[in-house]
Length: 296
Ligand code: NAI
Image 1 (cartoon, rainbow, N blue to C red):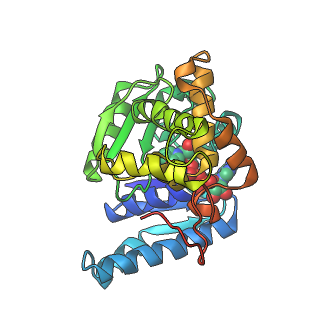
Image 2 (image 1 turned 120 degrees about the vertical axis):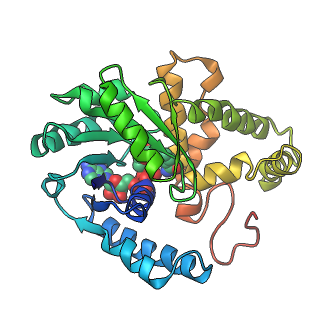
């Protein structure tokens, strides 16, 4: 099966690895050459780590790598049976890319978005054949997280839904059908989780009133007492405060400003300051090499 991935960032590169591991021929496209190069290098590192852990051998590494081609034009994705888009979370940009892609592909090709919060119906509406469009929402990191939400829009044909559901299962993922509502299942449940943690921090109710101890205390409580693998602030740093804030803002707006999903000004300022989390070296925690306090 020919798979195309648009966007070779955090999610696109992970999804490409998943599909290539499942014996698909994968083409991955990004507007930035550096992003393609970074994805290639990061896959090399990930696969080497898997070899060190004894999970794969050199033959498997070569097989996975040779299943992936890095391309620099959207036209190169013309032979894909299934395309999964993982670019910036912006409706206009996604619609523009979908429209152009459709003009290169056959009528049977399925076009999917990995969007976290945008409406699949509105993305699909840009296509001449909207019934071919669906949401396939992976979680970060895609190669490790088993769950994938499969989200049919009102326009999606039942054949496209069934085909996608079985493709995702054949990739050894746990597929779950989700309705095309803002945040689908997991991101909707997660909004109040992050939001309430940010409010407790802003109100100074946890640990020391100022500084790291406040959010570190909340993270500690959620892990030690709540049984979570990561606390909310560690998770926001992991996802990226920019991405996490944008998802909250979209869900809040889409639910007609329901206060349950209200975004946090603290997180907005962090995103504006470039305190994005792990990817920028600083978020709620400091990840630079000489940082004293890196969360476990
Ligand atoms: P990212 O910022 O890591 O990667 C996006 C990539 O898309 C960049 O390499 C960028 O150069 C490329 N790009 C931007 N515009 C493009 C265009 N017009 N054509 C081709 N490439 C283009 O973003 P990330 O985190 O991978 O997110 C991608 C999508 O996946 C978003 O819709 C996001 O909401 C969703 N998502 C993100 C998750 C996360 O934890 N980061 C989890 C699940 C979904």
